[in-house]
Length: 326
Length: 294
Image 1: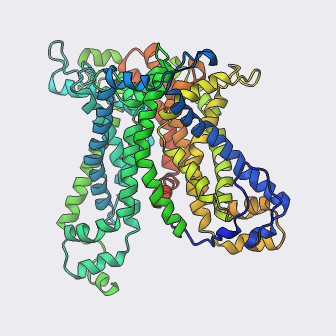
Image 2: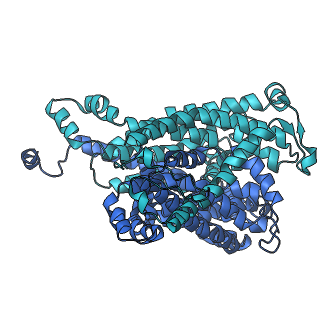
Image 3: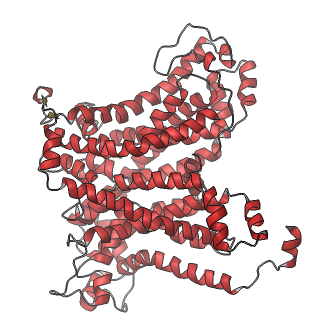
């Protein structure tokens, strides 16, 4: 989707943001001058109501997470909220045996997704872009996991990894007591087992993004390259891939965010037990677990927030700078 | 180009093509293998697999596990729960985000970009960043008589609200880009003719956005249907859960054997698969509407 030029007249923008009351001030230029007072009220409501809902449930709670991270609170009454400064973070960084493994696993999660399924998705997209027969059938096969919920994917892969009834152990004869390979329970194995399932889904997702990107490549580039006698690989490396830059940016952002959001698959798989800890799991276990430590849970959420912002902010700045120029 | 095309037959039988097809067919089959395995396991009785092992030729293949899983777990009930959440959530998200998009893309106000930025960034946050205060907030909001629990917590309404708030970020971004491609003359002419802002939105802009709305509706339906996390944290009564998170509960309490779990999991995936197969084009274009941009 390209953004068509809209005539942005900054001087004409005197109408306040949504949520605020409609003004009496006159708009000097642009088509706004034709707006009646009622129109402005309508506009204010149209933009204001959704904004209030979004800000209240998403941004106010994100800010509340930051505030609560510096407190202890049992959640019962507001009086029990106590300011503790950096104590939650200190405890988190120094005493929680699950914290650093969780950070590490989130990083591994991203690294695996970007190194294995992402190039695989690109490779499949390039093959499927060759205008071959049955392309739709192949596409559907690779894409099917993306349509299913992560929780269902977790159940499906458990049928493969189960120590005594699973496919792998049954095939290699490790499904008898004494010979078990415990794919789900062994802390050295379970993260990798889950990452295979996650990659299975991710490759299809990336394939679709790249297919869309490839459709946008100007065909004359390919023809010119073919006329120059470039090989298929040379064409891809020197002509096609560089034009996929916007898609690559999206792929990178999507992959990082998926790695930070990873939760469902691990939760149904083994509940985030030893070997598969993730930041998202630690936050959640503070809510649905036995001990609800709100300040402490919020401190973990703040770590997650900070890591996400490192990705979100540059991405949005780049995207919206382009938007403003348009 | 046309001369080149004429010289070559339309579908040249080249070894490279055959190799490509062999590769893709093999890869596609391997890709589907986990699902096919689940189907195979679900179609065999537990007694048989526990005696012969899972990797064995079948004596009986039937759909008993599917019917048992469906009946034992009262799945109709959970499918209805999901419908009660997903239908209003999808419609409300589209309605609210299209209004924001209309505002941002059709009127040149100073804070347009900032507003769009707030929505887009909100959608990119991991859900766990906001869950703790949200959970507390939901417990604080009393809604006696409106929801079964008397609170926003543990209610379908609560789930609808967070889905709408969260997903409208993505939809506002996509729809505003889409609306920006509509010629400005359309709404300007209407404005000169004295049409109200609401009329411009409802009768001119919205009908033109139908393709984008259809794509987003498909995508949102699948996303909201598949939601596991919000329901897991914000719903406490098993009875109130939507199907995806209910399945997690059911596997512990009702389902005693892996074959039944496989059948139950596959059953919950069926609606999304149907939506996907019927609306494939919309689904894919919805995914790439947001992604091609940037």
